[in-house]
Length: 266
Image 1 (tube, rainbow, N blue to C red):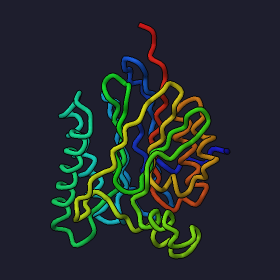
Image 2: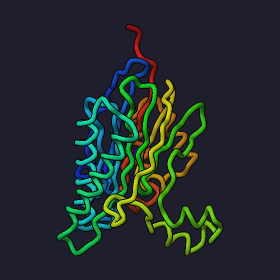
Image 3: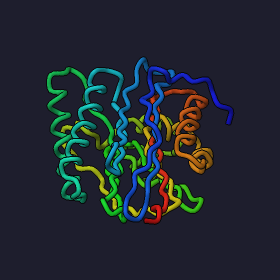
């Protein structure tokens, strides 16, 4: 793919590729975000922790103050809770973190006369590196490339996902398109829904992608698989963001790419 002119000078939160050593594996991580052409600002929020094996993406709902406030509040609360609980990582600690961020997002939006909500997807790896946990609310996704197979590891919390699974309408119908933006779970939801928690393994050679729907809706599956096979995560991030622009740049787009390596011999 030809490299497009850089339009990310104001939108991107630059994160240098880094290596996070664990007893059995090492993680090489890079991330980036792109405003695109539709919205006047970027309402996605990224987190790549500087010391812990922990990455996350959030996507605000809408293009107003409620969207901005939800994303920053939810991510801030999650980061605080994960760091406070470390090195304990598991369902109990993560559900506590999600309950806390739900309460804080709702409180942050209490005085706003607009929707205050966001999606949230995170990957937190246990200290020994043997297992990770995916945390998800909404439709920001986690993918895993393993042995050439790119798999979607999360489920979209949308009416569209339910409708497609239950045959309520064809995938390319107007009804499916409308339902795509009807989230059944998100941070700030009045029902304070629980997040999905999924225990996953991490093997040398795996490549993980956490992304907002500005990537997943605009970058074709086969192209995504090709780009994630790049030798370095920062190359994959760059080309995924360029791919979102090449497809129209109709949404904020954010990506975190994690490549798993074998730990260096001691």
